[in-house]
Image 1: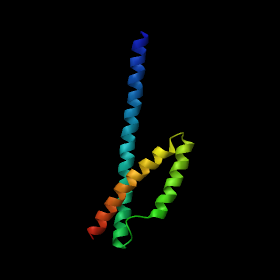
Image 2: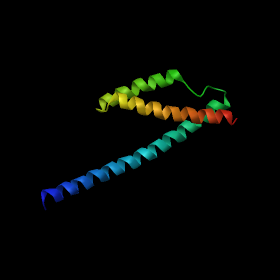
Image 3: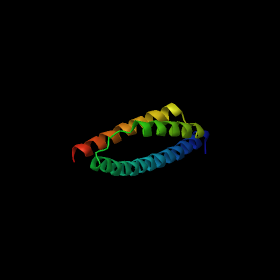
Length: 99
């Protein structure tokens, strides 16, 4: 096996790992959104606001600390969280409007 063949095999192995992680992330996000959908329904039934800035602030601090511990850029972790929360709030708002 040549160096090029070995590099190609290693590239394919690494890409397979990445594909598996991406699949796991999608399923975990789906599970997260199922849980937040239940939160949205609960908030709608009890006329609670769709957004909870205090909770979001706590989560940002927690996720930034986890990111640092995992050697992941905390800025990226915060951007990801803000993106997800924006979608959750949209779902919660839709749930409240549907009630």
